[in-house]
Image (cartoon, rainbow, N blue to C red; front, side):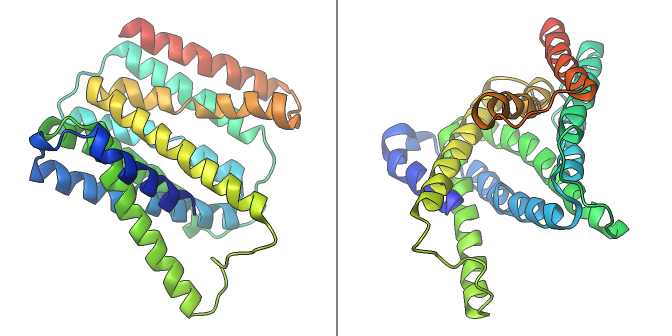
Length: 257
């Protein structure tokens, strides 16, 4: 429900917010290609990894996304990468890893091959950011990028849902008795969609080596919301170190830029 809802939202607004006079076929192809990977493929890989490994280890490995994104941007887009950016990115990665492991939910035993799932998700996310940056060079329309990508992802997810239903797995069955849950799925979809739009806008204006590490600080926001809304945060030294390191890493990157 989340991804198709966001896709519909973007499609409805696209006639008013996209300048189609500058449309470029290369950019459209890039944005559509990204749509097969993000958010659809990443979501499925993350869900499968959570089932086998738990959210802590899955999240920690997922924090490697900036590493892949920045390396690709440096080698493929010839972006500059200075000492401040390198140090700041490493400090942020360490901080968000501490924040992730400070939460419970890791599965005690899992086969070694399962690590491919969250690692694959991190690689896919890392690939999408330089790819979007490249596509925006041909058509500088972040709203078009997110609209095309989400439409492709929505079609992919709905196709998978249809196959699941035909196989009678019931994984995507709509439950009438939980309308509140469906409402939250819609809200989450719209929120993630806006986050993707903001990310693409940032990539259109700035470098991947700065944008990607800053995006990786989202566990800090999750922690704050959990603290004040869910009130389920138990403070410990690992959590404090994670918060300090994440904020410090952001400061280092901004200072270097």
